[in-house]
Amino acid sequence: MTIPVIIDCDPGIDDVMALTLAFAHPELDIKLITTEPGNQTQAKTIYNALAFTSYMKQDIEIARGLDNPLFRQLEIADDVHGDNGLGNVNFPEPTIQLSNRTAIEAMKETLLSSNEQIILIATGPLTNVGALLLAHPEVKSKIKYISYMGGAAVGGNMTPTSEFNVYVDPHAADIVFRSGIPIIMSGLDVTHKSFITLEELNEIEAIGSDFAHKVLKMLHFYVHAAKQTAFHGPEFKSRIRLHDLCAVSYVLTPELFEGDDCHVAVELDGKFTAGTTVVDYEQRTGLPHNVKVLHTVDREKFVKQFLDAVKTMSRHIG
Ligand code: RIB
Ligand code: CA
Image (cartoon, rainbow, N blue to C red; front, side, top):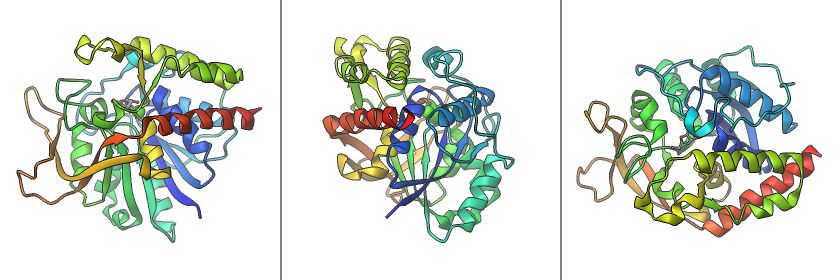
């Protein structure tokens, strides 16, 4: 039985690791890939999606999303993902042609024409998804759930309380979190536990393929660029958090994760807290649960799943 999905992303180093896992699992029927700005500008994220998916010898429609967040000025993460968005690792020119449909058109038509509900995997700011739901609310019934990397119950990586994807486009996130569509949130609470160690990267080194070499270069760039504070302890600096991988891994193997159903709201206006996902873990608001907030992962199985995907795709590419 195949699982129909749409992947909306901002590639992005950990986005392409998530795509690697998705491509390695034929049980995922990837109907469409769409991109938005976040880690880099839209021009670079769409190019990266086309180039990476071509390099991975996939045949999937890729459509370009919006160029900017719904209301906020775009802030990119080139300090973490590099000038080209992939740790300055270069892939061959794309062979896949850009879709002649916009991301919103392609998402809408794919969802409405499907005879089954589709899972939406989102690993960047929710700009496209928010715009889709505003323009075409009729698609809601065709989305089984949204597996989303973003937000945090505790902490943040853009401000003390906000995670990058929600921070970049909080208005879009607010639309999605209030949509009534079930959301599985892989926020920093679980992605800070979903890491691969520098030592575990040696297994990728041993694969010896061109793809494995590119993966290593991207992940080494990523871990050295990320701003780790001593707050988390010295070992934190040697942990490469594969944030976006969680959003795909949950769809494939939900049993690797644990979470709690909560009400989650998005703060839009706080002087210090704009972009914060306010997670009502202790049910203080009495508001309905709209999100399953993940907080635990079987890290060893998660890492093995990723390493196996790199091996599988290395063989597939040849
Ligand atoms: O906070 C982590 C998220 O921001 C990931 O999706 C990463 O790719 C960046 O977009
Ligand atoms: Ca991302």
